[in-house]
Image 1 (spheres, rainbow, N blue to C red):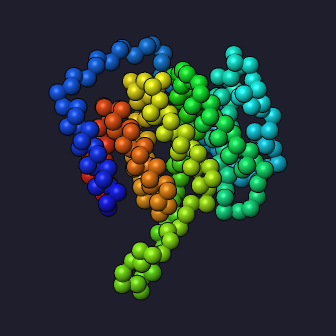
Image 2: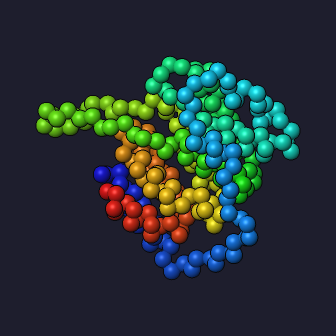
Image 3: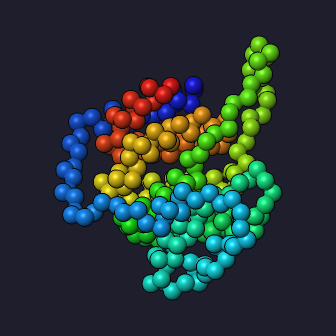
Amino acid sequence: MKLIQSVKRRMGNESDKSKGARPAAEPAPKAGAAAKAGPAAEASRARRAGGDDNPFGGMPTLREAPVTERPQLFQKKLQACSMVYDFNVNTQVKEKESKRQTLLEIVEYVNNTRNCFNEAMMQDVIAMVSSNIFRTLPPVHKNPNALFDNEEDEPPLEAAWPHLQIVYEFFLRFVVSNDVDPKIAKRFIDHTFMLKLLDLFDSEDPRERDYLKTILHRIYGKFMPLRSFIRKAIQNLF
């Protein structure tokens, strides 16, 4: 509860600062600009259950690739990272490590590359992030015989955190990037996306909730048309 109150206070401060400011007029949408489902959308729905093939093995690193080929390779790596692995079983160890290294690589790439988030790339970014973070959270197990919650008990930690942490870090870099135009990105970070993001606050892993708090605050500050919706959604959910 303290976490949500902290988020609300931050949002209130942002709203006070922005009062009186006239929002810039949005340009008319270009004809045919509606996003089409592509390979990333298909990959985002895939849940890797088995198989010996490694989707990361045949790709060179972004550093090794010629500069002109890096955007396309970056897109392919985003699509490959939409594959989700089960960390509750000790299988596909090589693939899991390959994905972790690829996630680290694309974080480094966006840190050192300007104009890497065009409109087409945004769709792949949100598809990759969504396929990784949006999931069914495990049920909360509490001892019905306990009169009080034991704050000294360590909370259950997310098994997939080796991947999730880097995905959250990548998404945070995306949200705060000066290359991301909120007028375009709001087509992908929409009401449905935000509701799913808010649902993740039910995670028992404090590391995940910390990332969610920071990302929600950054989205609230950058995407002005979403502010009213976010405030109402928080009130309804919490």
